[in-house]
Image 1 (cartoon, rainbow, N blue to C red):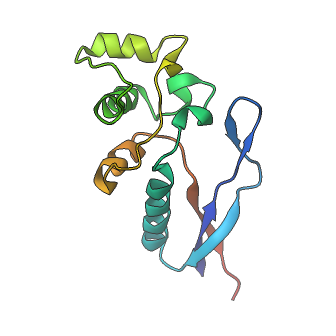
Image 2: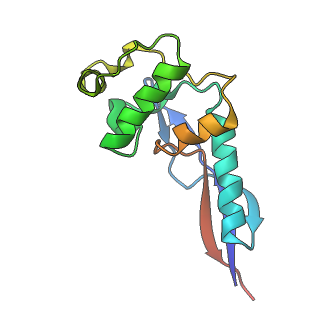
Image 3: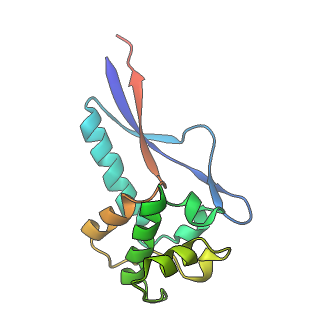
Length: 141
């Protein structure tokens, strides 16, 4: 019988960024249904983003933070809407050049506390950063 364990991913600080720790993390909750486990993990990840400074979790700039090229543009556009420190620009080339610069952290990447859950989901779906993950295990009979 399969079970699904929601694990809290742990991070260690290395004097510049937080990096995912080895060992998988801490088990939080066990589910018999994979969909329910994933929903719990996703909900927990979204809550963890609120107020978080994302620039502390990558030393690779945008490449280490988001899933791909299209997602990088979406994340920057998201921060233009929700962060007062981001410059306004609708020019994709300017935004892409900024994201690919050697100093992409010139802007504050803290997720505001007052963003709705729906808007956090948009951000979460473009990031490759997880604080909770689902691990499938085979339960003994």
